[in-house]
Length: 313
Image 1 (cartoon, one colour):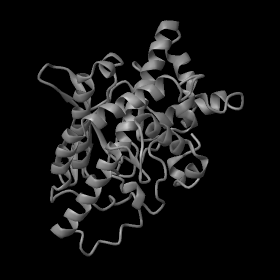
Image 2: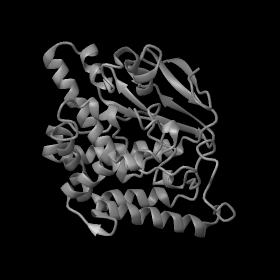
Image 3: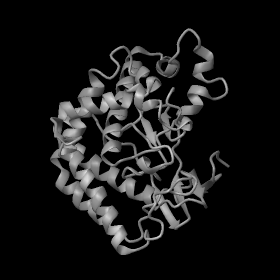
Image 4: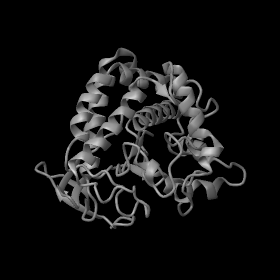
């Protein structure tokens, strides 16, 4: 059994090749949106591979299999070799306890502990930075929220981050009881893992290249997303357990008219992001990335987020 509100179960299955594999079974969650997000990530990875600059940088989003069985259950691929970020940072014997007070943000020590050989240390750190950059930009475009440290895993072999739980997407985070105020998670511990350059250098350049690919491929992305968002089975309200305050549209949320209105609104905002429109101003790729980084790190934004999001990590 895993942790979490719905207490999902971990089972072991033997495949046709005779190998035993762990899988996560959920019986109280709608996994259809998780499956949709994985489809989008597969598409984005395909687009990133088509452009030489992003292919050479090995920019991609870590994916895993999601199989919805019903509206309230499904099976997910177990992400082997990963550790929940919150467990590494503040779990029993976590990095904060081991390195505090000498170092307030000990995420950098993940690389020293796991990759002591210099070339491996450098390679894994670059892999970490690139994965944070790609997942941040794609997550922003998709309006992905609920990025607390229990929803982010880190691969102990490649140092890539793996995002899980996509119940809050298409900017649903803005209608939570305590609205989310940042475009993606770029808190001090996340930045600390990038080393002395922080968000400058590799992170910013990879963010710009990822955004460039998405902006140049906006027709493809919007065509796919338009189909997904107009699905009459898509749930537009915030999932139960995520918020005690839902949008004031419950009486008409099941009507086709309401679904179409919400879908059009989501698509319009997606299109604005892909066109570089921020606060009514058309921005260059570099300017848009700089603005998003500033918003993600702004203490005035972080201090207003729900405490369980743990913006101090």
